Length: 411
Image (cartoon, rainbow, N blue to C red; front, side, top):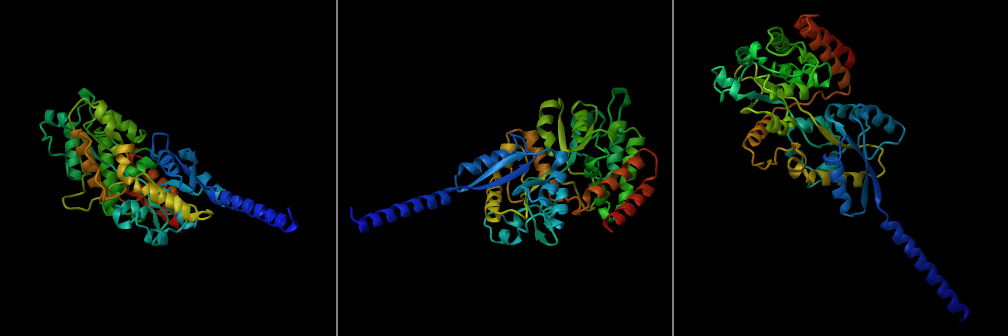
């Protein structure tokens, strides 16, 4: 081999090797990380498996975190530059991160998306992912609360089983008629626990009374808390309403020891199995006929941390997750946050009727806040509810105190 020929061969070999390295670099997947509370039967890990199976050059690694650790651990990870690319965050905590610019502003990306369209979402879930007029996340799923009632007990008390109470006064009257201490039956069950569940249940009452968290001591909110106290003092609800969770309080209803219950769609499957009586659902009663409706709003939002190195790839993942909203209930029993999607019939008449009620109630669901200081604000509301229901303070005085605390919290 001549020198020239040998030199060309070496150059060709180097070029081929360089091409192989380039192809290898191009073929290496972009790695994203995602944090969520979801267990193996819930959306996040399963959606990630589907996404990764596409082999589209992006792979997501999943980490399940615990509820009590989400806020502190996620904020600490962000401040130290170790945040995941994507997180599923409880909707009332979204504003805390968005207001600090810890979440990526997705407004422009959403404007250019053919999959994620703001007009397709219920107003409440969308508002919870919004801060200062911009989108800092995408609703993952949603839930709300409504009224469950025992039709058999209605009939036994001489009440029309197809006419559940529509107003607060009717609710009081109905609960009184249905309360039967001799049979260990309370008129109604709900959760007034001193945690976020208590706020979740009380805030819609205050909102229907014309209040916001900024005016939590309005006349309507005082009336709402007064009614809760009347239910408790009149033994129309169990004394442990102050300490029981929504899940536990609804178990009382399922056992036939409460004629009505205020709870969410997460109870439907358990109720179908456990409740050995005819039951129905209705929208939450309003202060008076024609009054504005409201309801609580739960579940999580998807968000991308602002210090991600792969914003476009992370948004592609969110678009994929949103594309699966249509099967959110069928696959995971969670209601999509979308008003444009219809939950297909399950084949169970009781279940389908209940789902219809909750989807209707979602039209009126409002976010808690949004405020960067929501945990502190919620605590002020919880303290007021507990003080009033335990007789430490009158409802108005308790809510006046909460209103003062909230003003100080927000500065």
